[in-house]
Image (cartoon, rainbow, N blue to C red):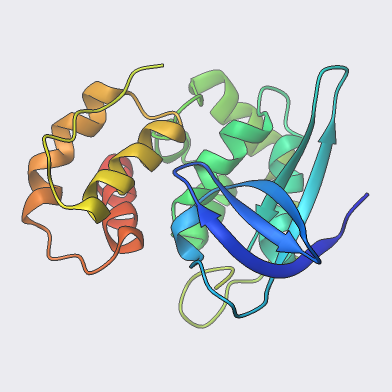
Length: 201
């Protein structure tokens, strides 16, 4: 199993990045690909390798703590890697942990693929297992259908694609799009973070 990859980001897509490590390009699925930038500077991405009969898939994380939270989530019955990534894409990890600790299933059901039963299972399985994931001073743990894009700026278009790749319904994404179009974002990550905030508030 891999612990992390250290290399350069050669491509960023709505649901994954490509990491070049000594001439080998690794496709890594990540919660928010736009946290990474294509460039010559080396980057470390912590990874989890899922192996099945039909595929070997890498999931990437900005640091060890985010990977640990992912591992806790996928151990919950009903939460697969894609659902766990969609949950982690929301930057409010402190709010996520608080919701789990306080049995706030309403907060949890706002994520794609998480219904009331699964939200209850998350609380049941993880309520007393998050103390080792203390939040940082800034409140975070770590630094099908397609929604329409209508020719808006490239950063917003990429953010819309990333939201649908995470599993949010096109109807829900299109509903918040007018607000995103008025949002003064400077990067795809800005638009994606604002979109996640709007979808889960």
